[in-house]
Image 1: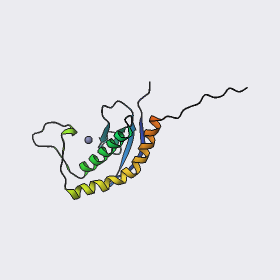
Image 2: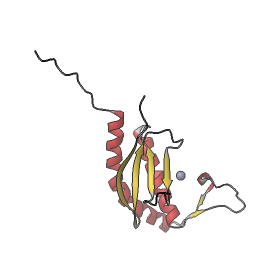
Image 3: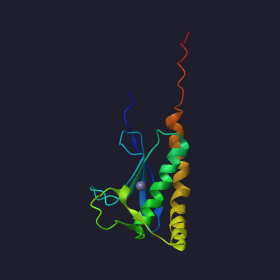
Length: 137
Ligand SMILES: [Zn+2]
């Protein structure tokens, strides 16, 4: 049985803060997760499941990075009278120019993160084949 994996790929800038990116293969119940203010006191971090096809992994990374920046810039709201604490019920409100800022801040991170994530994704889906050693005569 393959053990779940959680690997730190790097720490790069989103906006004005360093954020850690982890590749995961564990059954977390979510393709992606953003952790703001981790309990261990470390940096904010993003987890992306790499067990899916590449386009879904990339989709998840893009979702988490944009969402991170939307929250940080104050564009995330909880609708009134909504008792849910689920992030699925959050409302994002931003202008076109604010969307431009979100994209430009996110691009710095994505520029560094995408090649690392893709390399890790490729290694997970195409592990090196070990040929059996030849017997010495
Ligand atoms: Zn989300």
